Image (cartoon, rainbow, N blue to C red; front, side, top):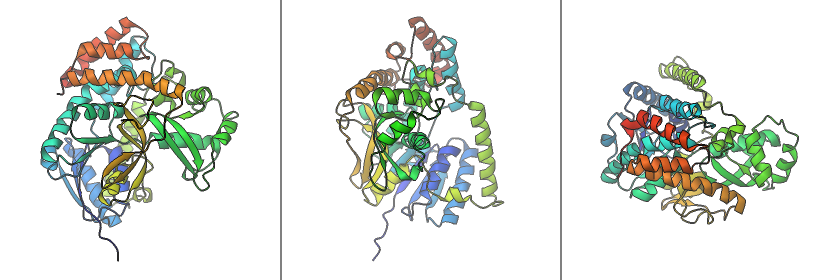
Length: 430
């Protein structure tokens, strides 16, 4: 006899995001384990929310997932009774992110994306954490047993701050390990579905401790080392330099990993392509509108599981007590990687079941790899303190700790300029 499915309530904050929303929908409406559950979509942008709600209802109907879809612009109205709160919120994302990249460059700081490391990572933290703590206080009041699953950057700093200063349960999810697998498979000449990657480290800077053939368990590192020697030298050059120097492949890409390194610009310092992103989003939303109006069918690949963030895997693992293995989650370390600080937010494999989310320890990192991450650990810890206390003095200290900063004068000029730009969002969190 088939066991009935357990049901739950999922609140999705920032559901108006086309990219995060579609990725979530692919998993939500194809997993087959959420029938009878309620999903509440929340966004302050009413137009974007209406579009994504209509798309959710269309995909729900076509897939036969049997999920109840609700929506609201009022976060507090959505939260009571929630079992899971998924967050994809960002503040004025592209405008402020562009400034996070351009202002440091103007003052002579060479960096890559300006998002999770360097000055950009600091200001992402300063403006984002006050909002995150507002959400956390609402969760603690209205649904204290809910698991907060964060999808927004800066992942490591959000989870670190909440683990230090909030009583709610939280974790982060990222698709970085799968992006690293894509790069590896281009060199190996293998399909991604045939390769397993096991990594541990920081968000956007894990070290892959195992790369194996999924069917046989064969160690693929010897083959990767051999084929990498003759591969196109222009292909992900910074990652490959680190691979040759440290002996393990780092995630997840030159631009993301490069944010944490003083020489990260060697992998390219062009920044994020905001113009292409705007074109892609406009195209995606136009496609969504045609699907919603039933002018075209729901694309077949929208009715297949996503390759990215595994939030729905965690949720169904907990709801159905299925002991679901998830390749990567951002969690508080507490000894999972024994040679990194215990209170750091690390990215490791996790298992989800009715008892919660359980980090999987792969043991200590090789000493040199751990030491490289430890440099960034101090930066992230100081940035969190600056944001939590709304302190410009601490923010300067965080900048001067960061290996991307090459001048004290530049640090002061960057701080003054970006602080004024972000002033409306910076305030003490506790």
